[in-house]
View 1 (cartoon, rainbow, N blue to C red):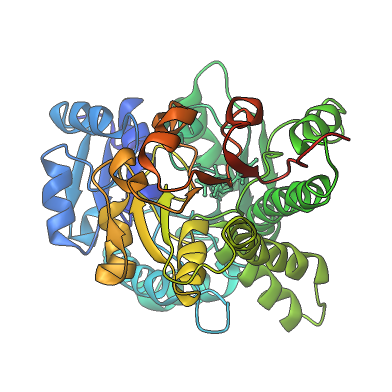
View 2 (cartoon, helix red, strand yellow):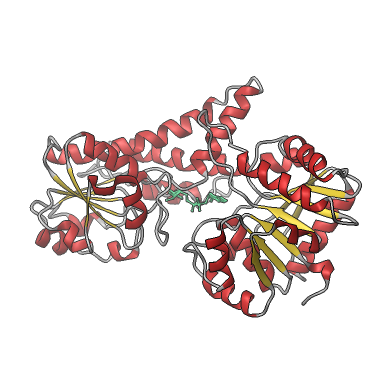
Amino acid sequence: MNRKSDSVSIVGMGYVGLCTAATFASRGIRTVGIDIDDERVQQIRKGKAPLHEPQLDTMLRKAVKSNLLEATTDISQAIDTTTTFLTVGTPSGADGSIDLRYLKTAVADLGKALSKKPGFHLVVVKSTVVPGTTNSVVKHSLEESSGKNVGAELGLCANPEFLKEGTAINDALHPDKIVIGSNDRKSANQLTKLYRRFYGSKPPPVITTNPESAELVKYASNAFLATKISFINTIANIAQQIPGVDVGTIAEAIGLDPRIGSLFLKAGPGYGGSCFHKDLLALINYSKQKGYNPVLFRATEDTNEKQAIRVVSMAEKLLGSLSDKRVAVLGLAFKKDTDDTREAASLRVIESLKKKGAHVVAYDPMAIPNAKKVFSEQIDYAENSHAALKGADCCIIMTEWDQFRKLKAKDFQGYMKTPNIVDARRIYDPHAFSDLSYVAIGVGRGRA
Ligand code: UDX
């Protein structure tokens, strides 16, 4: 077992907490993962990830085997570590504001445990929270439940994460920055030291600031990325009206301008995932409460919602009425290489297709179990792409899975009743599909 000074505890073994725990342990830092879900804890103890994330299983197995990672439901074990990260979820409330119920419970339980600890303990808020939360809700609850003072026996920092699903382990090992928001030097120093140990001789840039700024960095980051996607989708919808124009060329050209940058300029059916929509709603709600209406972000969200409607209307243009038409939806996950369907554009598209009376047959290599939780028997699920295409009047590509890219024009011609294709992810070369009835987001058909 390592020195006590190098140990961390992480409360909330969801996707962020688990990836953070696995990477800390991989750097030789003793880590205690804490969760209220016993089943989850048992699974982690066996070195098995309760969610799909590349590299996570291997890393967990090694961490558990080497005794560097323990998992428990007992939050009092946090007191044997020097630093506790809070990584519980902050889902959307009914009005879009963040629901702090899990964070409040975690902080109160942690505080109670810390009341018995002699000496200093650092608490780090990694959960995404609106500015002011660390210094109000978290600080008050921690002081009340522990009977100790933040700034004296307790340290407190806000330290947002920027992990992407599918590359979370790599993102945690090689972040482009670390943001530490703290009120006092002792807390900031302890966290900086821990990260120095983690990153060794090649540390990422560290921005040290106050908790409110650190909290806002996370929202600003996601709001910018979401807005960049809605921006390129807007240009795509304009490009699509101009024969011979492809938004891919426009994105490539503007992306060469370093002020713009080439990433996050892929036009498509709109963003999904657990963060962008939730964080934009929270930021809009927070800002309005402060007396400022951020209309730009409302437009980002509206553009995103409407993009799914555009996908359906592209199918309608090819088919006429969708009523009683068999529509194959290829892809349910919000992006490739994940089973996550949260806020996926496919859900909005399928919802709209159903309203229009279409018969939906969906296929996804990984996400069918999660889609079933949403649609149950309201749609059909196919065993593979070909089975989904069989007898279909139209096919809509909703996720950019590599196996869909490999489909050829003859697959669509061979299996579908009529090969009408809506390529919402722009994965095919339009020229290879010139014999089919093919439309793609951001591609103006015909010659200029
Ligand atoms: C995002 C942020 O990138 C990450 O920093 C934050 O911590 C959590 O939210 P994630 O939700 O895992 O990560 O996915 P990301 O890869 O960012 O994609 C989000 C959505 O945007 C996906 O639906 C994706 O298909 C879409 N997207 C992304 C586009 O439509 N075009 C692009 O160019 C990029």
